[in-house]
Length: 155
Image 1 (cartoon, rainbow, N blue to C red):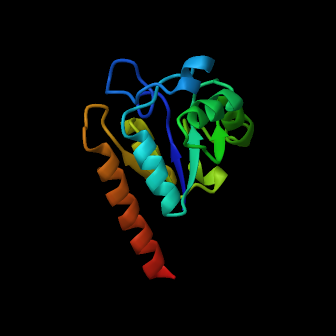
Image 2: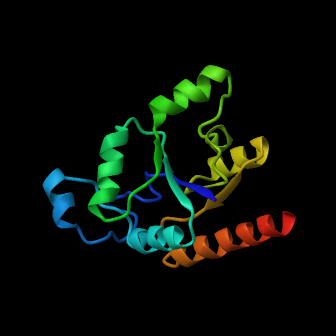
């Protein structure tokens, strides 16, 4: 499955949740710190053969985002930033903050209830996690397992 993650207040925040320990490389390139548990989660998703995408409404460069995750030893497969979203989604007349189907994404993980509402309206799957939820990694893995199990039953 192709799974995308929002950045701000989902994976990155300086005040909302505990952060992973800075790696040597993240200090060198001054990468943003990521939410504690992200390394474990991304490695487990890789073991399960999922593709990991980042889908952010920020204008951060794709290269900087990819490097940030590489510094923590967790490469991502593809980055959708606001520039790409505008070129592929907004130009086609879709007035939506995120539209994972445009990028063949099976499920999108975010902190925004607005994105969840858009998912219901436009027919894409979301997992919404709270910034203060300590067991967020297990919650995501359990929900992805449910989606994967249901998908395999349909085949």
